[in-house]
Length: 113
Length: 119
Image 1 (cartoon, rainbow over the protein chains, first blue to last red):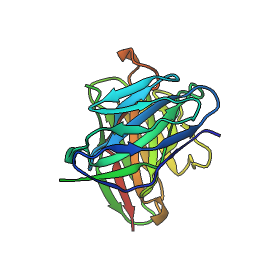
Image 2: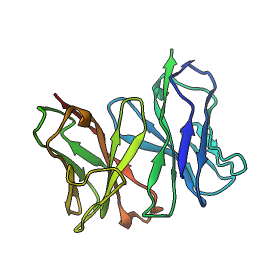
Image 3: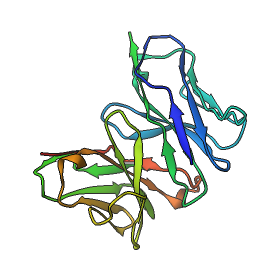
Image 4: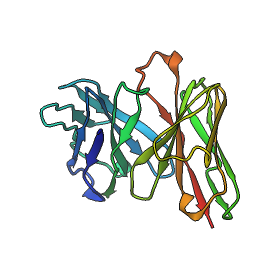
């Protein structure tokens, strides 16, 4: 079946540290891949996406590359800020049954000043 | 643009009562809305897909008689948890698609969620 696996949290970093949150997927077909972010008390927001192999999604200093050979979509940021503290969800969407989205379990990030 | 609201943001109810959660698209028309359930420290699980003017499509294992979904207009979908029990306590999130924005079909906008606690 289709699934998304991402690293367990929480991840605690100091400000300006490098961030990597691992995400791998299993899918039949060719999914689109996403990273969503959920700030405290708010709904999920799309952070970035990639729709085909080797595409790189980027936004707000975050980036992730769609790696078909390793079925991965790891999220990275070179220098995190306290304001990046949130829960990050990796997800995939397939063009079957109306573009349902399948989410990973989420990774909570704490950034200390 | 593309704001989705949910009401209430949190609700506490007694076991056996019914609770209605509203999901509204504030500045666009949403022909399709999705309802998710999120358990603590777990992912979002899709419960059902709601299309305006037609019956909702439920995911396997979701009781349609317990989780009633009504998508009566292009800006409003409701989820009613009937005869709620403590195990229904969870975080319920809706999302909506705007087919007129010309965005990829997988684009969806999420509401802030409703926390339900059944005592």
